Length: 365
Image (tube, rainbow, N blue to C red; front, side, top):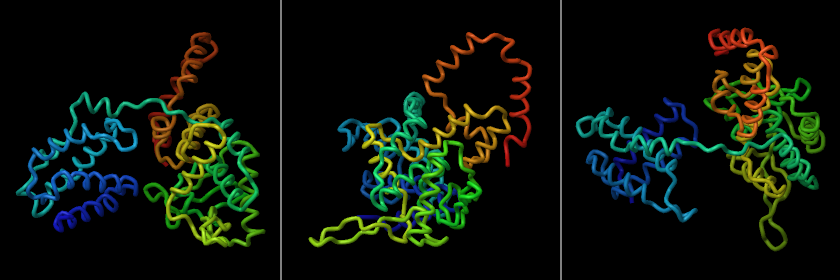
């Protein structure tokens, strides 16, 4: 069941999110899912017949909905993100030709949660970030018997070495990696980078063991498998039928993964097999941000580290990735309490921070 007019305007909105707002695939899918839930609630009533009672009723229903996965009510975060997506849609819809006489931007505000509920929804608990030692433990325990095994191990090593996003990794070609120079060119014309940005990532200093796994993998593909520059750095698994006509892995294909889902599954299996909690590919970027906080000694060094993660502004690395873990927070506070003033020249530190925050060269490329 669907409403043809609703489908037309929804399609226009999703194009707007992609082309004008430049949102990623995940965000667009989330918006489409929120709209589908709302239409199911209204029994596909035309958006031109929208009434604020629909928003209020849907909000209450969503808040009371039971999750199929957990058997409990939907989390405040899920409710908030769904309602926020609908709020954005109706704000946009209210200024579209043919809808202006039926809606006002204020109508969209009825999808908002109360201030108290919004604070609860946006509250974040500290999520464990894998340490370098834990990641090395995972890598060392991975099998290396088949082509697929070697690829999976190199995949996790490469993610730590470069901090690349899983979507970008799935689309990288061999030509994008320069082993001699120790860098990856994330060319947005061919690589699925966030916001379609092109930038160069130099290998992070995470140890020679990790680097050599990646170097060996590239050599294996080019020398043993005769892959060329245009072939994928991490090829998809070739699926074949066995003698019982059952599908099974048959080595490596010459095709890219169509999305990052297989990468996340590889990470999940590797961490589970190592007896550790699952750490998704994106969490490695937080691992690297925390490593940068320990290694970098000047604002310029941290700016370079931030750019290596693909961030245009260094504050993105600080605010989004650089949260200090609780144990480390306690360690630093206790250390500061024991430090003498002469150990840390206050004037010099303040001047560095002022220069860091005020000079444009530390905020932009």
